[in-house]
Length: 310
Ligand code: CP
Image (tube, rainbow, N blue to C red; front, side, top):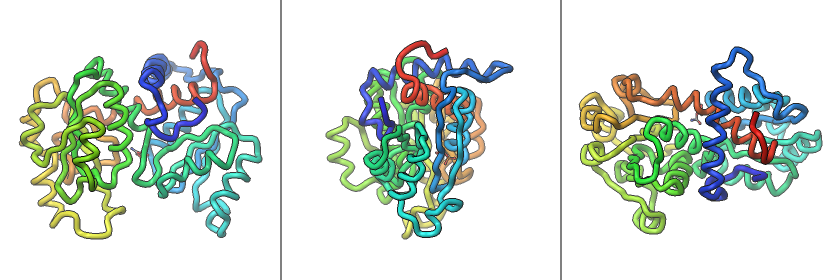
């Protein structure tokens, strides 16, 4: 693996290898001295053109715990804001001898484009509405820890599917691991051409959350991305919550063993109630914790190659 641009580029064996290595990386989190020598002398740039809390911080922590030199840049504080092109900026940073750029960008395909321009490893940390592969890997890792092997497990993915890069990566990752997936959204937030896509990629579609919840092993609630909406996708926030929010009433529809995921940031009271977000079966903070371990594993696979992770 040189880049991580899309889950579609990974074989099932590569996905499994990232998840398995993350298990040993996760142990570092419980140590008093959180430091491995694995990436000593390697330089990683976090280049974020869009806001982030979880992804940016966890990639930076992951790099630091593996002894890499990590540097953070945002679009606002760089020469991009003076009119420099993305190509010139990317090539300028690459010319400084960095080993990896971790890129979040509002344009779908920007990290793949940069990978064509420079020689270093590129990680897609979320590009427009396209993909967020490290999120899908950490989601799979978290669900696997809670439920065991995901082969045959049923995952419901619910919410603003039209604007979700997390959906696209999760669908690819969960299907590769053999999970059954059902997508649930109001018709206005279901991606266009969903029937053909479902037939090709082998997932199910529903518009009835109450019907799906009793069948799932995990439900993943996705954020309503109001910043990407130019029109009225639903009448009011209250009507969205009534139709598609994971309310206290709906929590009771889940099987006893079923878990709740949300990649964050959450809109409490809209797609997820406080009862659901803070429930004992909620894995929201487990996902955040797993984010560091899985991103350490990604850095290991891309920069350290095969061998002993310790
Ligand atoms: N889930 C996720 O990508 O969160 P951030 O935007 O905080 O990185």
